[in-house]
Image 1 (tube, rainbow, N blue to C red):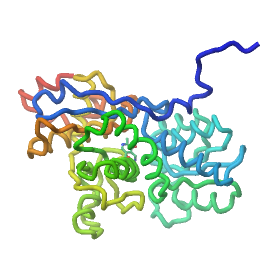
Image 2 (image 1 turned 90 degrees about the horizontal axis):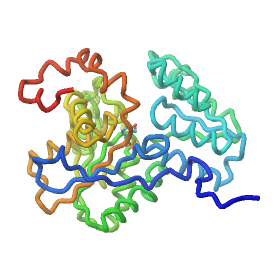
Image 3 (image 1 turned 45 degrees about the horizontal axis):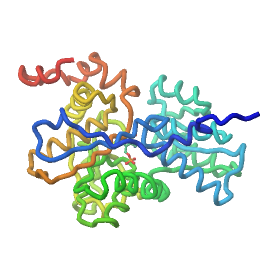
Image 4 (image 1 turned 180 degrees about the vertical axis):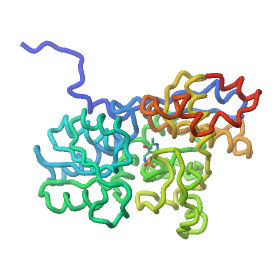
Length: 344
Ligand code: PMP
């Protein structure tokens, strides 16, 4: 006999409906009201659960996927983890082509979630047949019943956030939102969320966070791709060296750039002050808010929503490691005053 048990049917039912949490201590000296949409509350600990589930369910709806078929993507990051998680529950194979630059920890994590991981050489160009882009593309072409997620160039990435993240924020704020601040990587989060929010109220200001070393801000301002903007940087998941079609540049009012160093310290500060253990790009978003506050962007009527994309546990050997921070030289420029604030 089946008793009435109050349980979810599987982990996927917990995707989305993440909380909005008021930021109070880290914003103490800022004018305005600040809230974080904390995407680490997704079961895969990041915002990418939303697109993984949405894109796979759209493929099912269109009859492209049936149990035993294959999901393919080129990422060792959050998207890979989310795709592996959704694939397990729904009974698909998940193949992830990753670069040999990916850490062993990341590859082990994906394999633990049942993904088949193909490690491809990092030191070849994107159009080389050995590159992880080409390997994924080829496997998709050769495999019937496979879906290539292709998150940087897939409109469903935007649609996932248009259907979920945007409406959730509108409901949670009862429409009282003046600013949306979000990272832009593929651009899916910021584009889909703001497309919905601006349909509800076109006056909401949308500000994208970009990295030094990425082309997005310059492209937004000039509509030209400037390769001179590109150089290596540390923050993972934000900014890009190409122009993704999953970014709706027209809907974003402006971009702001943040440094690796300040973003890393700010991520640690969020954990220490708010008790929210968040990832590197959440630090980037908060750092952008501080810079925007200095520029006079907010007043006492501002209700600012920041999207915090993922959980701090993925950064134990980076932002949350003193050794890593020292190796990057991120402790060198701290003066006595700021040391008191960031005493780890
Ligand atoms: N932060 C992290 C940690 C990410 O993995 C990503 C995805 N690349 C982003 C931010 C940016 O989100 P989006 O790709 O939707 O622009």
